[in-house]
Image (cartoon, rainbow, N blue to C red; front, side, top):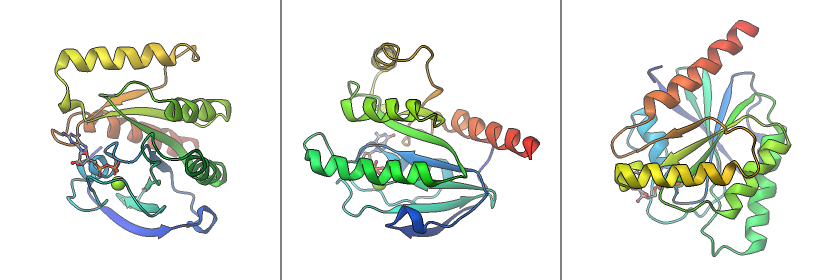
Length: 202
Ligand SMILES: Nc1nc2c(ncn2[C@@H]2O[C@H](COP(=O)(O)OP(=O)(O)O)[C@@H](O)[C@H]2O)c(=O)[nH]1
Ligand SMILES: [Mg+2]
């Protein structure tokens, strides 16, 4: 799939006030600084669609973008670094979980993790929660360009082995770089495939 049009629709602070829609929706989520905004800009081929910054985000906003006039890409707020307080992390959790549970048109949650990092407890907990609640999701390893080929393979293999401690089967996963554009084709192809299968079902 090629992204021909990508437009910002609306920002919300309240999950329940987001536009009701029957269009398929893909939510991107991950800790602050994981490279979410950069990935969204890379996928949509727009430099500033989602804001990027070197500093972790401040406001908790849900941003809706409409892609090819057909599906929604949703930028969910990122949870902070490891040093974020338990209370703050709980707040994020409730916010995001509430969103996920109330979106009827939510098709898939894209969980972003930095390919350089060890599996992090908050990510693993979130992934487990998605599984328990039957929410379809995929894992996106970001910033692949920051590692050598060898290091990258090692890091991903390590992450997978961590997941296999609790999962019988690995979820779909994609390795991306906002810098080089690697992984865009596979990820967009996956979204397109789901969209097509939904069309057939309707
Ligand atoms: N080398 C490299 N840097 C990246 C990549 N993605 C994001 N970054 C950098 O990581 C930082 C955080 O990125 P951002 O997209 O703002 O993260 P967000 O907080 O998850 O939205 C910025 O300095 C980006 O330039 C990538 O794929 N490769
Ligand atoms: Mg961002």
